[in-house]
Image (tube, rainbow, N blue to C red; front, top):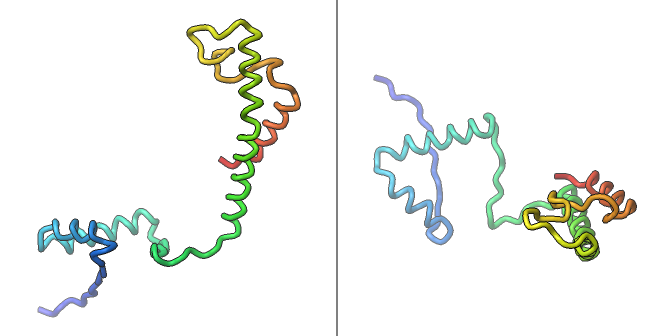
Length: 138
């Protein structure tokens, strides 16, 4: 009977960084490890649609991504603006509640919807918030 060609895969693990993986690997009975490794590799291929998704090791700095950096800057600016608007918004909620004689016991806000309606928010504030929401990338 002719021998089949084989390929061998080697995994290098260190006790400092990979102790959890080493403990798990040692918990698999000998004779089953090959099948477990093949199942994991097939699952990876299926999960990534047959392609390879490069994984940068933890100890290697990730390359600079200008698009991601720009998104982080935009998100930070949006959060800063929202936090700066928060005290004024809370003050208007309190004024609205005080002007309408308090909150009913079965609701969480003056309208029961968690959002002020009507004249409690100026048209300018509403337009500004609406524009900000349009720019937001969820």
